[in-house]
Amino acid sequence: MSERSTPLVPQRRRVLQVAALGTLALAAATLPGWHSLAQVAVREIHDLRPGEFTWHPERSPDGPVAIVVSVPDQRVHVYRNGIRIAVSTCSTGKPGHETPTGVFTVLQKDRDHRSSTYGGAPMPNMNRLTWDGVALHAGNLPGYPASHGCVRLPTEFSALLFSITHVGTPVIIAGGHTDPAEVVHPGLVLSEYAEHEFQDAVAGLANRTLPAHVTDAAAEPPTSVLVSGADRRIFVLEGGRIIVEGAATIDRPEVPLGSHVFILVDTHDTARGMAWHAIGHHPQQASGFPQPDDAVIRRVKADAHVREAMRVRMHPGMVLLTTDLPAHAETRTGTDFVIMTQGEA
Image (cartoon, rainbow, N blue to C red; front, side):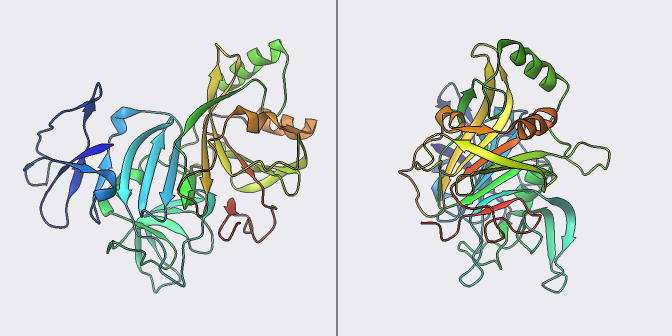
């Protein structure tokens, strides 16, 4: 995939990506407060230099957002409604302070945050991932892993990203990942359902929206669901805290579920099912692991009280995770919604 990049004044570059009907077109404009666009060059995403990024929200103006951080590539990919709208360079943790891999959700947002660990160091546009110090924020990008565990981003990109995330936005930090794929499950969240229940699902989602972008005590907290193949347990989390858990009945339990993230989009009228966007990930592998599909969800069934807890909280952007790891303190830290995969075989 090619990118159109525009050299700007030193240390203030921005990469513009333009595509129409499969062909690349030139873009010419003047950005307020920036120098006029100079020459336009075609560049591959992996050739972006430190501090450069792409940003094209018009490709998918609304829908659930998912963020993938590729540690080997030092890149951040932003997907909205299953479509990639941005790619940025980044800097993850240096040796001895490696950024943990796994699945996180944004726990807190603070545009003007300062570190309580490192002498009040500024961390602009902070999206917190763990309560012990891992976050996405603006910072220096030398072109290699250099942070104390956070994911540093270009300042302009961090502000743009901050504007579209919300508490509960999923963030995958991995060695490799698949692009989002649409998956339709013919059931009402980890169960089969009768025909009339599909209409109930449609009605239930009709008045629900994505969680608010800003913290609001009156807003409904985001819902996440964790399925642990090792424990054969299902956990329903609200605002990052477990509120309900129960047994998971897994078909062919000897076969790994895999590490997958499913993001609820809406109901699918034609297929009469729930539509999800699914992303597979692996802590080390860059490729070669399977793309998640509906077969993964079909293998899992939940107890009635767990299904009901999910049903009444179901909303666009709800996150469902599958993992073969146990959901104990070493893989899910405290009340953080974290599935740590670092060191997973």
